[in-house]
Image (cartoon, helix red, strand yellow):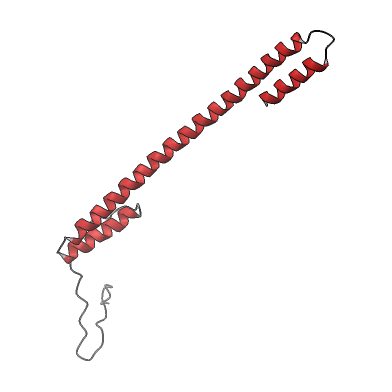
Length: 135
């Protein structure tokens, strides 16, 4: 853009020879310098924006790499656990951690289940007694 202004100014200085052309040449040089400065400033602003974007991308990449390293280490440590109940609980915790969910309390996880009601001798299931008073 600045080169085009410079060339057009030189052309005007040559073809407008009513005067010596010094006025056109000096104005052309000034305008060309101004245009080049504006373009350089615009490029500098875009470079600053690109640098900030690259910085945020680098930070994001570092965080991703750290999460990946931590996950790999957690999985390797989990392989060394021998207790199946604890291992299942830790696996569930890792799954919840990777999915960014909240880990519930482990109070009910390791308790044995309540026994099922026993069937009567004739094969029928015992019925619940109603709590209404007898009349």
